[in-house]
Amino acid sequence: MLAIRAARLFDGLSPVLVEKPTLLVADGRVAAVRASGEVPAGADVVDLPDATLLPGLIDAHTHLAFDASTDPVGSLASASDGEVLDGMRAAARTALAAGITTVRDLGDRDYLALRLREELAGESTSGPQVLAAGPPITTPRGHCWYLGGEAAGVDGVRAAVRAHAERGVDVIKVMASGGEMTPGTRPHLPQFGLDELRAAAEEAHRFGLPATAHAHSGRAIADAVTAGFDSIEHCSFMTEDGVEPLPDVIEAIARSGVMVCATLGVRPGAVPPPRIAARLEEFTALFRRMKQAGVTIVCSSDAGIGPSKPHDVLPYSVLMLIETQGWSAAEALEAATSRAARLCRVEDRKGRLAPGLDADILAVAGDPLTRPRALLDVAAVFREGHRVR
Image 1 (cartoon, rainbow, N blue to C red):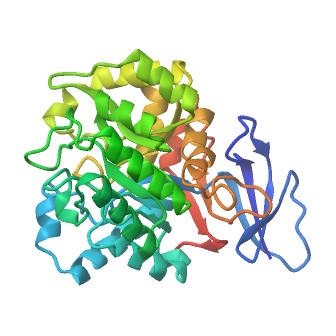
Image 2 (cartoon, one colour; image 1 turned 60 degrees about the vertical axis):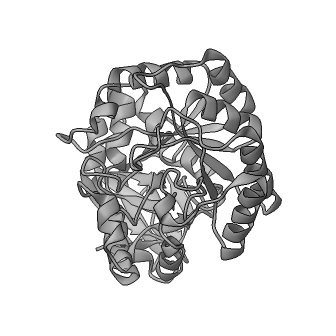
Image 3 (cartoon, one colour; image 1 turned 180 degrees about the horizontal axis):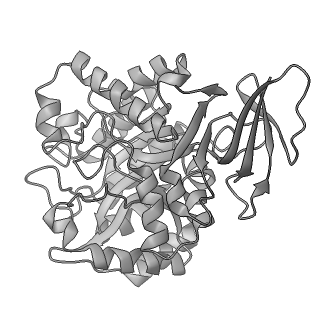
């Protein structure tokens, strides 16, 4: 048994920290959280006297196959599968070192994230747990077509979802609108129609899989909600030259319980793409409006898509919710732990520090509820109870 003693503990839900906790770990899971320094006889003890223990962070939107360079698409296109996998392993290690113990990869090439998922399942200290979508389902020559997920028409979309399910993916990702990284597509324009999106969601659910939609366009967002998707990625309501929140659609998102995966964080000093940078103030107002309307927002990153989004950027996403969106530190941390676990359907194993759940633990120096930037000062990371070196 392992006993970790610290100054404070955030359990993933309660805004009230446990003071001077002892967290007990057995067989890779949390055995108990005690509000005392009592340690069972024979336990190995780790003392972190100035640290706060938190659940390992969960990045619900990342791309391990993209290298966060100035040309991630070109880098991917020129690399062999072996080279891409090496890069993905390095990206996974980078994420884990920042305390990100679970990632949901929402777009790889040729199902390489599934190969990495199986590899890391037996090497818990080499990377986070990987949940994988495989190549995102997109229209012919649509956004990210080069990853291998093209499909056309209702029957084609259903067949693509079945093929993904048979490969063993954890989630179905559909490109409901265009995106920034694919010439010839436009983020503010839909790609699939309502019938195709409904077919994708129905087929995903038939296989017991969640369905998430990449959607910037207001029309695409509305159609994804109507079609029965479980979550919306980005949900930016972009127009050709700005951002236009649609009140009826925002109300429908809140009413339906569809979660929004907000990909907000950037590395300090990095400059987002010009079209995104020009809309930052509008995005800030949009996400404030969605939160006020009761939309459930999860904190994620879109890591890998450029220099502003390295694979350890998620803590900066948490800070952005606090510093620009006005969230409390506890709310923002919940959005990257227990709420993200619920979105990813791993809440029975991840996202909280509670008995029976995986001992995925981030320890940071200081109190992140009173000094949120303590989240950047990593004191220790544990994955399934094993300390990451």
